Length: 599
DNA sequence: TCGATTTTAAACAAAA
DNA sequence: GTTTTGTTTAAAATCG
Image (cartoon, rainbow, N blue to C red; front, side):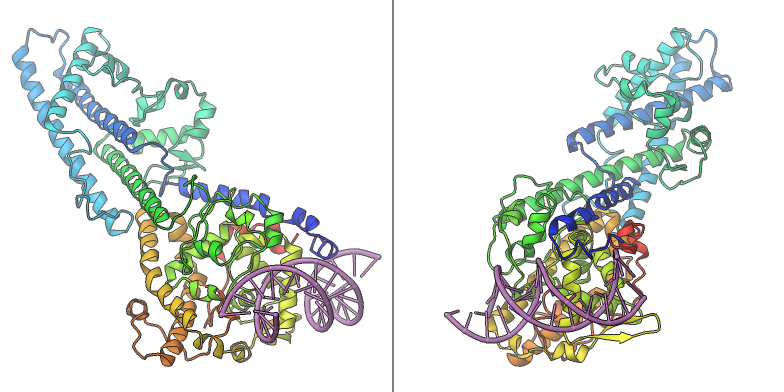
């Protein structure tokens, strides 16, 4: 009973209080982050140099353990002698040579496994090798595993072996601090295997602080254990408790070729992600520089470019959530709608300083084109409390057309709004009133008495009746539209590639996996093609502008008049929507009370 | 400047 | 009686 009624018509203040976005948004945030932390796109916050260094350390660590393990095995199998020392240099040398050979073979195996895995990743689109990069990271075991390094490593290991023997320390537990201390590389300290790792062969760099974690804490913070599942790459074995997890680790992920290779692969994955992130950051900076974007906070919440130049937050939104935008950490990506009205200065605060600004008709021609655009924008608006640059009528229509039966109740329309747009998770009183108002105002929305009650449908004919002549007669708009169409594709491709390269979960699971988005994509293609068709019929029949799109996504071209109403944005679509709007992928919102019973 | 359109606010009534 | 739904009016803002 907390719906907008009562508070709705009084002031925004109460509506703001009723707004669900705050808490829900945090939930989204958590969910998203968790999704990302599940392996696909780990948050890497170290510099490339640091990462490389750590990886190098880890590589050395792997190799050390391989050797130590071999040595131990040999000792256990009878090679060890109580008095084996310098008195038998020839025998030892022979052993050393054998071990070195085996060691190199192991390295080779690891390298091959690693390359296979990377190839696999590349095939899956999880990794993309840039043209400037080598086709595959063929450098031996990542960085530094050159022959000289191997020799150095071998010296370390053998010296450790000797030290172990001389100290009489022949128990099976390996303490690599000893190794490091006694090695010729004193800088490589702090490589301590934790108690768990010492038994399971887990490779990790632990700080003393980490070492001091209690068992309880550790069980909660172990990066390979979470939600009762082993998070070892490709494992996902269910472990009821931490103890069973440890057992599982020891049994299934012991120190062997496979585990070490997987470790190496993981390192490579992280490295690739880091490299990609760095490249994309650089790319973003260059783009923003090129667009004269003033941004002192590159990590600030991304903003849809079109929203600043063409459409920005409404007055109520600005007043209601003056800090919502910069505090939107979950935005996976900004809409890639291009700016078509000249260079605009985009700042992180501009949206709040502009005051009441409304959409322009020209937004129609700023709409993104490709499915990736739609998907990305969808994701953006789902997570960022940014006002979508679409009219209420367009949104309502889209909501209805997405429904399986092309009809929705008012409450279902409400839910669609809140589900698809974070912006509409607050100020419910305002926008719900607007929705109702639009439903009543526009003739294209037809109320139908149903068995369950009243539902709303869309009268497409009526919808498209409205002022079709306006667009075709405006050369500037047409030009905008075409130019937009022309250059937003590479933008989208770039983003899509970037997302794919980084295997951002949002992209793969939510955007691409959501049938609604595909529906939106096809719908907008239709709309655009219709617009282009219309445009071209008025100007010239040659249609170079749309050819790229159609080459990739041949769609039906609708001969339909465009009207400002439907043309306000990506969601104002002449759609043949036929997908079920069951938002299985939107579980972030499904459990929100706001969706079931708005405020 | 003007007309068209959209958004926002508000009042009101009917239905659930 | 309360809430939801639906209608209508009005004003402000935006854009061509």
